Image 1 (cartoon, chains in turn green, orange):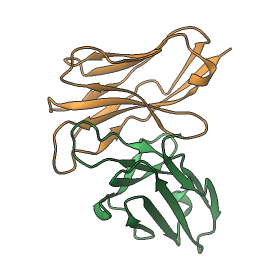
Image 2 (image 1 turned 90 degrees about the vertical axis):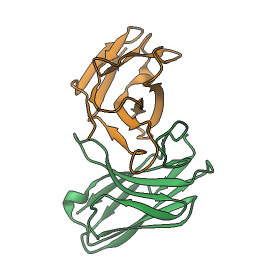
Image 3 (image 1 turned 90 degrees about the horizontal axis):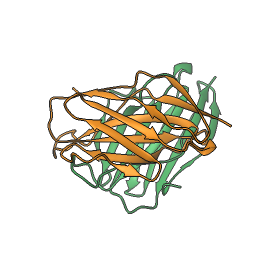
Length: 116
Length: 118
């Protein structure tokens, strides 16, 4: 266990549904991340939050809406998704977002999302 | 921009044997960190080992060690005495050592799927 939990672990939704993914970290970190992992592709960084403020939106479509109410919790709200959005969504956290030492990212187990 | 290349989509090894996973990267920076992450079928990405570019000594964590060749921009992972639990997808990743901007970002390779045969 890395100290980062994600729920649900699996999610199947239709294109007209609205659902949310939840991430929680128990490491006292200040930065949290959403990644998308598709088959045969490198991990894609979607969003970054540092001290609850969004610091990165990597050109993610608006059908993905992140929320970070505090440094321990991160949500990804989903609505009107497309089948190509089916992927593993990983959450990660780190102490901070500087490039120096000690800011390794710790990952959650992911949510396997299938969009029908 | 930095790039990370893992040229071996799949590898296999016999239990108790040694296997080496390859990773090359491209960067113009002199200060950076390199990582190997392991993602077993349970999907939790776990940090296996970390190398700091300014350290010449290769990092070692129990049965895992790296061969860091800075001039060649190569960062391979050696797993000794392979165990069934080592079966996983392994990702090589790069991060800048400089503070500021988006330097905290990890750049990942596509991964190498390691199978361990009993």
